[in-house]
Length: 376
Ligand code: FES
Ligand SMILES: [Fe+2]
Image (cartoon, rainbow, N blue to C red; front, top):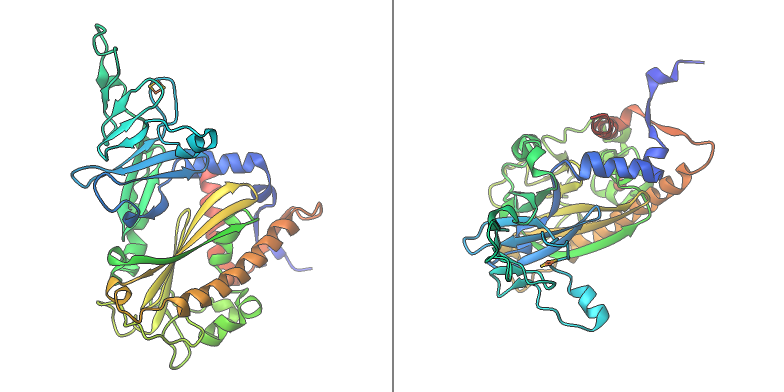
């Protein structure tokens, strides 16, 4: 018998994908510590706009202030902890409370009327202002970190101990430097509810060993995926399509123009980035598919797949994104189907871990990323 440990690396233990305790560790060491993608800047386009995001169980209020700056706050009042924005709950009880972002310039708690500026400063606390020694400066909203890159919105739940935002994005920013990501706008979005751990989808995204069997249509457009799990491909330069194909659609072609600023090679190739921990970004010459993962529990993940296009194309009367969207939706459903099989199969009592073949070298990075942080 040969020494298999030299041939193949062990995956994370199955418990890392299945157990509540492992999920709690993912939350504590990754989602509550790292910068993670939470949408696009265009979700809060104007001064006074806001959005509420549920991030690994935490409710976060993102607002744009009058000067155009973004702020992120925990959606909780400093007084007795009431949710500041929760119209859904009011609707459940059939009541209308004067609360949340009021008049686009103030955040108001409905309970005892404390009000905050969009930047989180406490502006007023009824009757308390007259109390001697009451210092409004001590009761600002709890902050989350907020940053943007390429039009994407990122949050950090522990801003005082956050790693460098720029360092984490340096390599993807260089590789995608010619793509006008910041200018792109979201066309259709498809939200998928997948019965699998978030790490299963990351590992699946990072290898093409599965492509010949799972994605026959994709392999028609990128025949190189049939060879050796695509491990020989230079993702930095972009992967080549078959002759005559330039993008991820069923035909490999489209009527949309290439993004401005691309090199001749980028106009006929495809690039993919995994921006840890939760943004999978696939970029063609005419569109991008941005997959934002929202872990819901050890065995459940929502993925918002946002299709991004150049606004010049979107305003054309003949604009029709369906060639890209339909093709991606097919490829995505193929992926989610196998990911769910992995999640259910891993629960077998005899399966304590799997293996990464040499063709899954990039998936091994996920084990390293997770293990590093769990050990922190
Ligand atoms: S809990 Fe918000 S004002 Fe009292
Ligand atoms: Fe796939």
